[in-house]
Image 1: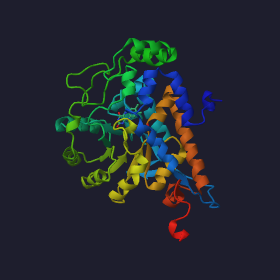
Image 2: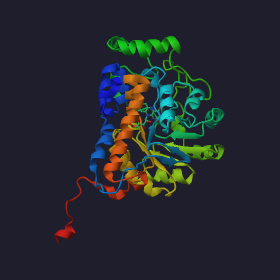
Image 3: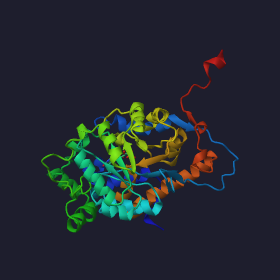
Length: 395
Ligand SMILES: Cc1cc2nc3c(=O)[nH]c(=O)nc-3n(C[C@H](O)[C@H](O)[C@H](O)COP(=O)(O)O)c2cc1C
């Protein structure tokens, strides 16, 4: 029996990852910004929606497959882009890519990832690339050319990171990018010998200090380097005009991630985006941002019915995924869960997280009385604290 048989939920992986990772690394993954109002809100909102299931509908044959942007995936969830994964698990990006391909899941490579997109796109041929683009069209064009040559067909532009976030927990733990080794970090590393050997030492001896290999058209700086222009330089100049320009230049799929306002969703549709991802960056950018699940209905109402609306933020259970599907989302992305899996048991841990979510979705579909995702409709959810009877009934 696999050593992972005791892990029954994504939460089990989070608790174990907390023990295995140095505090600074765990908190980098888990944390949000400032008072973590957005981070906590992302989870809390799921409890406001409850199901009213149907019964006796012969659910003996079930499928959770979904076709989005011309590709069929085996499940309605995938891996959101996460940067600097190599501090969580050695060669983490390659492990995520392999697992996404094996499990037929959508997978977005982060612009801040540490394994070359040319390698990742071979491991996961349908992977998407997420760009942290500067407001500099020459650079954007060069990156697009590199992606095209690497066989990437889908670009996702993140729009919620025009400036760096105020992640106080990272500062308190001495975790900075560019990364600097402090006595606090060394002390924390020494208290986690397995991480020190398996992640830190093996990474340094095999591939060396992790680099931002996919941020630019050429190999980017190492995560310890303080570049003259800073790796966030120019992002605060990026505008819809630049996206219009990219739309004309990039004939393949183009998406925006971080759409929270219905007006932005409307603009995204009008400038020809192929889909939008409702996201508040997992509560890691603007604190007190509305929870994506709460922003979802207004976004869906503002775009044409044919435009797929995707979502991420706080999804930890099959029921969470199905609530978003019931509200009209086409795909859900997860960010932290697969990193917790990777921290605990590398490839096997990532696969187990996928397996847990997939089996939860399968069971929940049956319990809802649905054979497939097309049957997961709005009438199956209700608001938890809705009035028990309406005032008109009392009159
Ligand atoms: C450790 C970490 C790194 C992240 N890096 C990126 C990134 O490079 N690009 C990006 O667009 N979003 C990034 N995100 C945000 C995720 O793509 C996603 O929006 C978020 O994690 C979803 O919330 P969840 O973690 O609650 O599932 C990161 C999130 C985490 C936890």
